[in-house]
Image (cartoon, rainbow, N blue to C red; front, side, top):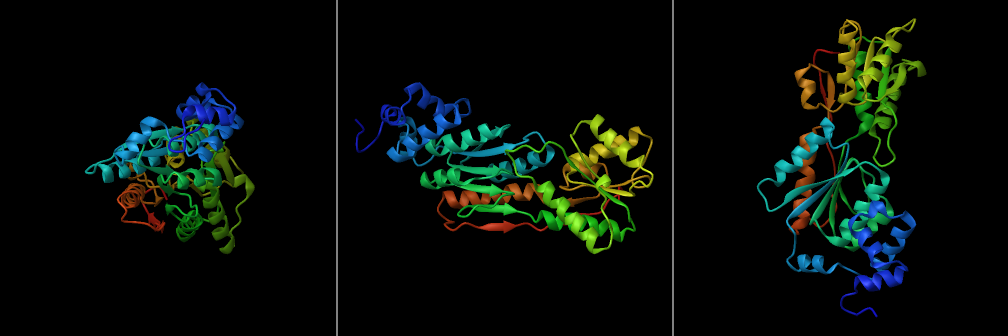
Length: 334
């Protein structure tokens, strides 16, 4: 029978109609448990107010000294720079940064199911990931302070940019430089577990071109993986057209830099043969002279960590939604 002060794992298992081992898997490796079973266990945990005993002790100590960062694509340059900003802000404080990489929707849901209950971290930063209502409710119920980057959810602080405005800024710059035939390259196979700012960047790009009286033909809109072979095929497809584009806006710098490499392999140059523009302003963009849109990646990470720290010490009680200003960085490629 459940006690009134501290329900046990046995109470959770009984209420959910599962074994103790299944409850343990939900708390430790939730992505290995079927969603229906995981939901049943989590509902039982929420209804009973269950907290694992070891974590209850940690809560009594008022913190475990860790901040979790849940991130997709954690080896991509833009995400590395954001995490660098978070790490720099946490460096002189009492928190170490723990990275939780996401490679599937199940793993994301698992982290958002497990971490609020087990309290293995004092707070969370979610990078470019959606926070849906069930997970948001759980975070709030268990009072796990969370800051979102590139996503907004009522009740949570967030750091954002205006991706549509960024796409429009790219179009306006290329038009100002005298280019009239403009193409777009976006990522292929967008995963269902992350946000997709590239779509908004394309929308803003297309709208600005339309307002300037410039058509964006469907043939000029390509999508590719980061494979250099795929990028090369996309570049060849564009330059082989009867009327090839004069300039290309890539939805992120990782794509744009690979376009530059493909041009080099084809004995072509930017901007002479094809002007190339990116989005992000990662470190390598400056080294290779890439014209791009800067979204202050390090700064967004630092600000997210600042907001989280303020919440953890009780200095910030209301959610803050901060929009960072984009900046055009003109270099040699466009």
